[in-house]
Length: 146
Image 1: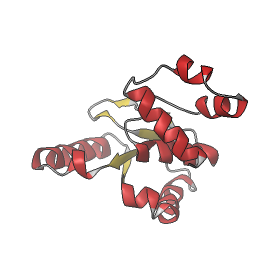
Image 2: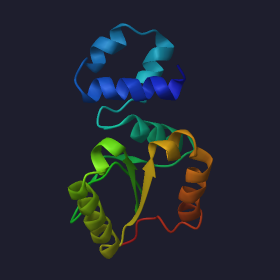
Image 3: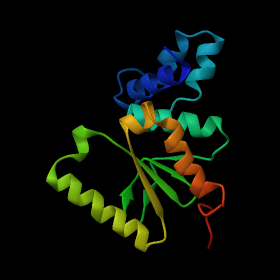
Image 4: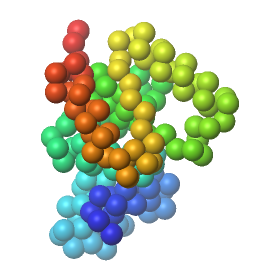
């Protein structure tokens, strides 16, 4: 298992409350405890965890599960860029599909930029996905402004 996959699995364990952080730490050596420090039980999917870990490794400041006024909870935020990691299970019903589009419009109206990534985008197309994120962040269009 790669380090990022271990972190994603641990995120899931923490999020679902199958174990407490202290219990996991007690079973780990120093390297494992370093990995545990990078885990976040607020992450709600493995793809969300992978995106967070990868972006932070590249120096991005990533906020996990922020609540955005008029939009609600989103998976990740990098400045003014909102990142959603969508799965088939939670985003294919007509109701969820409509709600996602309403939330996207609300975010845009309020000055937020939003990108949605699928499992395939993150696992098999990460280079292209990262290029899209960098297209927004390189020109600093994602920076927070008053």
